[in-house]
Length: 126
Image (cartoon, rainbow, N blue to C red; front, side, top):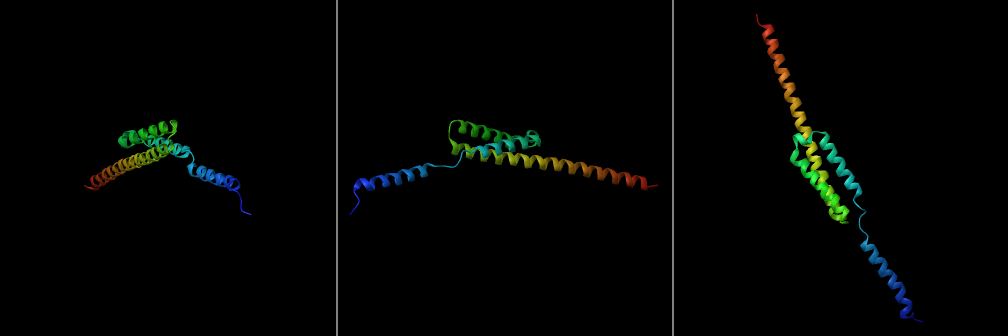
């Protein structure tokens, strides 16, 4: 005995519905990405990014603001993309700030060494 169309229709409808729902399932909201971007911006600010990498830090702040706006309007894909961009810009600002601070410290140490050399040379001369 062959099943009737009505008997096949319900399981078929369930399968189509399940398939449709699973295709609509997307990534979870980018709350983690937003939190990571906020932390990256804060880290860059704490590393004197305003002084040494203002352009990159401002780009990070703008991207973070756009990510938060996109999240508020329900555009999670754009929010995720902007949050990742904000984190990348903030990381770049942090790295540039750290480099500038390290370079300043190196210059200071080189000046100290030069001063000590001069002092040793003048003390050693009669």
